Length: 294
Image (cartoon, rainbow, N blue to C red; front, top):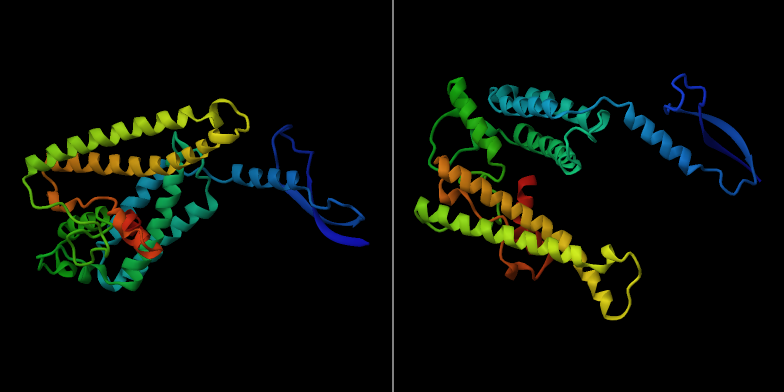
């Protein structure tokens, strides 16, 4: 049977010797070939395309974040133009640049990619679906932001940018965990220190359990009761939860010590486990940090 297909052929005549180059695709006739698709060639081609993309850097991302904040300050009649100004560089960075190697750590690179997606979602919501300057207000704020001076709009824009869940604002996300009860700043700081110590202890214990797993130390198949060590894989999920709790405690502690926020501005990152009776309540109330994306 004659099977017409596209077969990738690497051009070995690259003047740089061992450097990879783009694969040239040519239509060829394959007769009774059990493996007409060369996955290795395809993988090499994809890697080459990624290598040739311009490198995205942390400096580029900082400039994009500044542009994102400044877009909030433009007059409401031009907010759609502002969306284009933010969305185009964000899309270009996602599709046509290499995020790997943008920072010293691979997880930070993934965070930059996730943040680019967030910028697209927030900008489309705030500039296309809503009129942020007219709708977003801190509770009790009666200022007319669209007609306010630039510096006033800039301070307001920074507050909106730094508060994605809209805590204490008219657009506050629904389903947030209970807010911190009214307490003094000194008591709140003390509670944060204790909370941070507990999170750090939980982090060390979790990492110790992961290191004890025979699946990682012996490198062989386990049977019988030792198979229960498979449950240690849950430690990776706990690791994410613990790190988010540490970050929340650290930021709350710094901002509270500097006096820039109040205790009521810091609800817990996660809700109570009593809401795990359905998938909707689990994602809406327990894993409430996902409301940053909404």
